[in-house]
Image 1 (cartoon, rainbow, N blue to C red):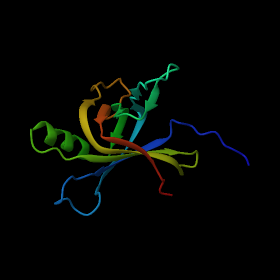
Image 2: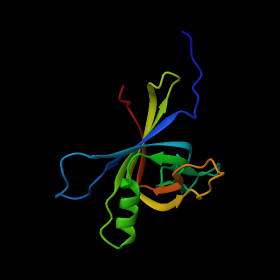
Image 3: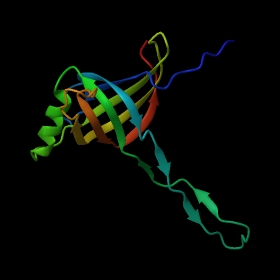
Image 4: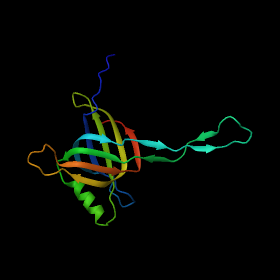
Amino acid sequence: MLVVPLHIFRFQVDFQTDSIGPTAPAGPLDLCSGAFSECTGLEATMEPKVIKEGGSNYGVAQRAGPVSFATVVLKRGICKSRDIWSTFNFIASGKPAPRLQVTITLLDMKSDPVIAWQLDRALPIKFKFADLNAKGTEVGIEELHLSHEGLSSVSVRG
């Protein structure tokens, strides 16, 4: 079986609503898709619980502890709509914060999906537009920071 190397610079980011509560509509609603040149922070860290056992002098027992997630940073990208900015602006106004379900899909050289990660209940916490400079090559969104409450690997839609 021939294994073709994946190029990690080919990925797509899809944003959907992820409403919380019993009054939420059935299922997530598509918000927009974006293309970004960099994605960092796909990271989950578990802090182990250390348990000292009486009579055991060789090390301590390690048990699963709470999991924390890093802030995901998307850099140098663009979305076809203003929905992400509208969501950020809505949250910044002090209204109840709608959450997002964000799917980051790695694509192969034929643009077929290979693997995907999902951020649950994501919240845009920093939005930085590109500088306006006629000589520059920047595009719409310079940085978008997302905090979230869960990271999982999901099956890809082909």
